[in-house]
Image (tube, rainbow, N blue to C red):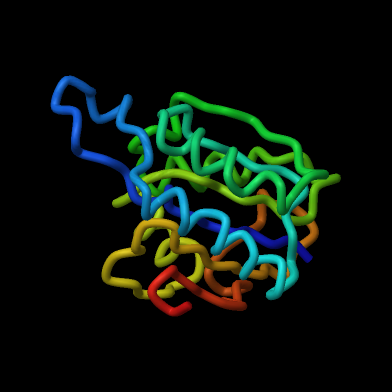
Length: 161
């Protein structure tokens, strides 16, 4: 059995117009929401062993805020996850070492929202900032993940708590 957690970065700031999209940091709400969502992930179980993270400022900051809740997790940063399509996200997941059972992808919309549908036929209009969901696949290899062997375990976001 393999599990995939898909998470959108926490709320970012638009205050500094000199920052490029890539450079935007988290705002105060994002700095509160990220650890709160990590706490909720702990309560739900299914903790990741590996985190695949876009290398943008806001995804890196989100990661830093959730890491105290997930201390045993290793991280791989990737420039290709910045504004990645669902297919790019899925390609990253499918290339995950099979010694890993649970992987978390921390990236951006629209790719994260579309990945829920492409991976499990879960239709979400728009994954909110810091939203996270867990999909279980009845397979032994990430290469074999597909909607027909997928089950959504949960989908949560900050305004629920």
